[in-house]
Image (cartoon, rainbow, N blue to C red):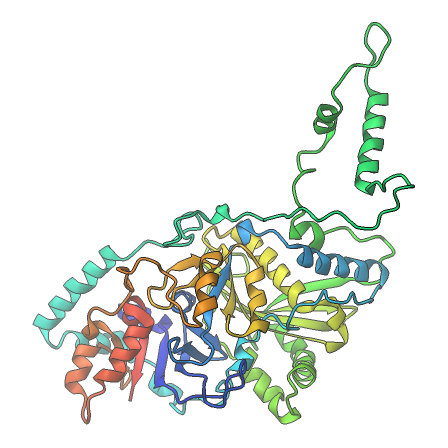
Length: 528
């Protein structure tokens, strides 16, 4: 166990914070959350934390106090493997193609999303730059393996019991979930059961009955195609064309995909004409100052961030300088990992940069985790607002998730941050379907269609309809929580005996109940 400490998550729990200003309803002190500073974090720990309602902003990881905060924030995930773009999504994709091919920058009224950025969560958390840690790095480095083992074996009887408990826990722990069995729990339906509902449009009024009825271009094209096919049919012995049912003839000569709706990839990777006006390049850059691409584009990216923040969020220059940019979107606690079975890019934090004619026009900040691509933030050049880059980048990230899934089969979800039903301008996230919301009490996923009726009556809801269901990952043994104290890793039961001064059991109990038993036994809780 000690050898793994070098790659363990190290967190500093702050407890329930005082109320902050809410970025959604503007309540001065209504935004309530628990928080902790992540000095380092493994991608698996963060995956498990966001599956319990946590979310990061820089290195600060927070969890809204759902039944108390003014605007409850429900974790929302989309299922990209079954995603089909809506009419409005296709409109955005076509608009981008038209811009790239012909330079058309016209704006169609009413086709933009309710919010320019599809990820506003971090902006709404004004605490992002207020909570830091003043602990020296030397205190965060565990001592040698031998020292850790010596401390952990001081009380032989207690240690034997601990080992039995840990062994039992490993046996009982759930295997990694796959895309086949990770679909909505407690929903009673499969993830592919969501259907698109089409309504028949009402007939028009005031038609000129003296003129022949208008014909759809689609019908005219179909008739021409049928006529051409009939002409090309081989003749029978009698010299007359074969008598083939027109519909059968069409279906036989159509491509297998003809009746399938267009996917986002059909739009994103559509071939542009040779004389296309613009070329868009999307680059995935690891968030690391040791990466040459990240370093070379840092200044331009930071300048774009400031331009976006001042134009869209009305920040002052001092609120969006390079220091704030670094703390907010470049400092990530996630440790990069590149396992053989993982995606080619590996796991960790990335900037997805959108380059147009040698300059960055948008950056999507994402975390690539074992089961998902988690969207962190988006900033873009306000001069390109007409392209609806918030929507476009979300669709690109859904396509990117599908791409990663081809290599890493367990990676099959796209987390969009928080869904805030009580804030109308944040409801648009529910338009990326099929999608699920996380039950704030039992931490199971429930299709959003089942959640919306209850959210209409109450802003805070338990989505799991099974009233007997409980949080399966809740803390069961506080003594097994792992602690980092004086550079030594030990279970909380041992730390409790060594601690001098007032008891901190209530704080540790709260921390463990929020992160769950599994994370509390893997992560190191720093204690001074």
